[in-house]
Length: 206
Image 1 (tube, helix red, strand yellow):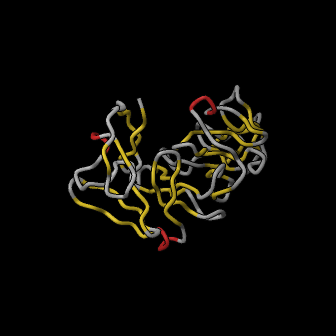
Image 2: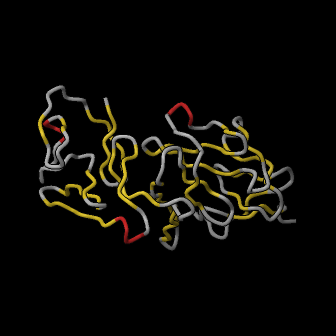
Image 3: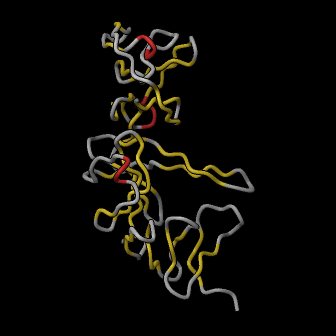
């Protein structure tokens, strides 16, 4: 089995043995060629990310956002440069969710600090068995392709704790969340509204 990316969603695809040419000059199994004639993994052409949307060919100029077209594992993506933001908080009023972009360079990762999440080099690759592990002060929260999504526990004032499955002992006033960033003793994570993603570590109300 292998992973297939459809937009930002990864699904499982059975591998096929036969090979046929695709329009970017590479090769792919018959089921791996989209209706527009481009590999379902996407291709890079002259710095642009090319992929299928049904029978339509979509082209993204990665340079418009300061990045470049690159391969992350098997997939062609628009990769953000080192130091660029790689996380977007999408606000739906009553709730929020996160969207992540890929980072340029082998071993790069999207690393969250209290202020933002930015592309950083020399973090190392990521496989499923790395999820939930510590690399020094860094907690590996997830993998996208072979890149990690990471929380820098030291930057949050806490420590990486695999048993807690995240950052632990974040001090008063520090950024926290209900799952990965845990407050220190005697503190609780106070969210600005019920389904907010991030809050602050504060003493419980009297």
